Length: 509
Image (spheres, rainbow, N blue to C red):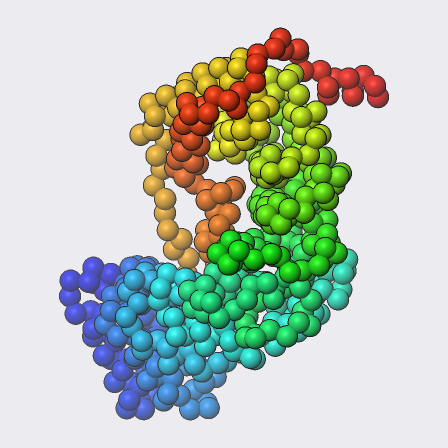
């Protein structure tokens, strides 16, 4: 009845909870009502919308104010489970004009479930809801200090951090600290627009910030990515991508130059380059996207000498080109594995002053073999962008462009013809938590929210089938438009050779 909304069921439950909060009845009655609401929300997530519209936030606030020291140990844990499940399933639009929740979150309490709830509040603020509550969370000195302590302890362990998953305390602390940092960064530009200088996150932690906020500095995120367990690497990489995205937007808007030292940037670059071919494609993609932004910043400042001579960039580009030019690269899985390297290569191709070695890496035979390996199943948006940038860099001849144009046209026709067959219905995450001690489920839910909320969700491995197809079609349209307007990007046609670079290497061994 509550999930349907066309009745008074939600109103009755909310009024009953309000009555119990105001009249000091048996605590067992309060717990029973809270459990009923939690069960309803767990089975029918849309009930959260109707409970919220009928004032559940105000009822919870009154209940919290009525708690005694003894009830804090019994009723409060049950209440936290209900709050988490409501915020995990309610639509942000329902909360936009509901200020009753703000008073609920002013009272801070320790515990992993509370951190999970704070993450959900920050998540909603990035959609324009619970802004005041999020502002209180983000500048909370206790949270800022606690996060710094957790990160300092974790980073001080260095290589020993890879064994930390067996040490529940430090691993669990990081597993909840990183999502809190991520959602804080997500809402920073909305909640504290213009009040925070993103460049303070890209330098030594000892730097005094004008407004300390919940965040982890770039170098510490890189340490966690380098030394952390696979799960910690994943969460830290999403945090760093979010931080770099905000920093890049500030640099673009304010026309600033990056203020961190060359040695600081070099250390981050070394970590990111080493993860471009990491086994987890999500970590590799996030690392490559961050690396691409660093390349872009250097290009804006005209400091590209280091980029031209860096062996890491050439290794990534050459490894990708050699792999995609070999016949085995026809596999869709194989192409996906090299998507992160494509991002870095595209960033190099977009440099105003391109490294000379790009032309030797993408020689005529290499490009021809890459085109020959393309088919309807292994063309991704990244591959389309790569060839578009190769054309802009005048590394394609007319024969190659003609073949590429035919392949893209055939692929577009096939995708449009099969469009209705490929459509899938995206289901919203409907996870619930049944116990305040269910830390694993809470953490898993927060990680899934990070992955679906991140910039990398639509630009990397987490994109849905529908999103990927739209990205490929949009990339092809840009390629066709560029081809029709800028024919001067195409070089004269020359006879092509069979690509044999990798074979020569094998025989040489």
